[in-house]
Amino acid sequence: MALKHPLPCKSSMAALILLLVGLLHITGVESIGVCYGKNGNNLPSETDTINLMKRSGIRGLRVYAADPAVFNAARGSNLAVIVDVSNPRLQELTDPARARAWVQTNIVPFANAVNFKYIAVGNEVFAGNPETARYVNFVMPALRNVHNALAAAGLQGKIKATTATYSAVLTNTYPPNQGVFRDDAKGLMNPVVQFLAQNNLPLLANIYPYFSYRGNPSQIPLSYALFTDPNPNAVGYRNLFDALLDSMYAAVKKAGGPNVPIVVSETGWPSAGGFAATTQNAATYYRNLIAHVKGNAGTPMKPGRSIETYLFAMYDENLKGGDAVEKHFGVFRPDKSSKYQLKFN
Image (cartoon, rainbow, N blue to C red; front, top):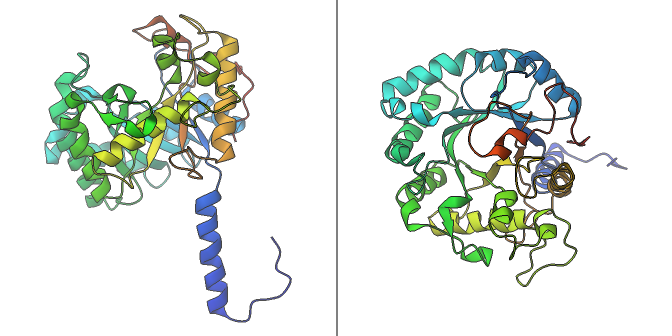
């Protein structure tokens, strides 16, 4: 926007700058990142991957462990980076000295050249999940210690410590404003949310309409999961992604974090390997999700709030364990070709 007349004084200019900054904060379009897993024996190098991200307009990445090869490749790229502390390392970081050592070894040497944004201290740790229940007692002390270690290294405010959770910790999710943490999740999530609120930190959440739809296809229309339902449902939602995200917001508010922002640290749709996992469905989901996020409409509970979002995942990973669909979430193939021709940003 061009000004027709010069402003008369510095104070007026300062006021205008503050106003514009405020408007950008409210209306700015959120960028799209991807989750960069490496569970494959046919994947491109870290340098080739980072270059592909930059060429494609991807603005951020999540890596699931501190990875010097990725960090070196990302030097000077300005890609926003989420770094995970993997669940098996959580107990180690309940010792403050070891948390400081982890930050000094893995973050500080790269901090001037890599745009670290968040440290995810644990991923999907939940007492109701047999695979992660043994880590529940380690998350809060490790999170606090990493937060303090970042501050001691002069990185507080620049890099934010948090944790990543997921929709399985919720109950009463319909209507979304009734969302609340399950009784077996409150022991961890309530203190986590209160810590994040006290320190102006976000919560990371993995949001997967695919798994919700697959688990209940008789009650959830495919069009609702894929952003293609033209009409709002009885409580005003046009898509399952927003409903799941607002359920998390509702639970976070009830846990004592009404102003804690939520970053969607994973979301995606598989192209093969299981029910409704097709290339067509995945393409529809990713394209509509990106348009939704870039449209900056927010959600019914948080209208106009940008949704920072990371797509799962960069590549199909042929060595990924677990459910067969886990191997088929890539938005790129291992030969670096685009599976869906997405316009990221």
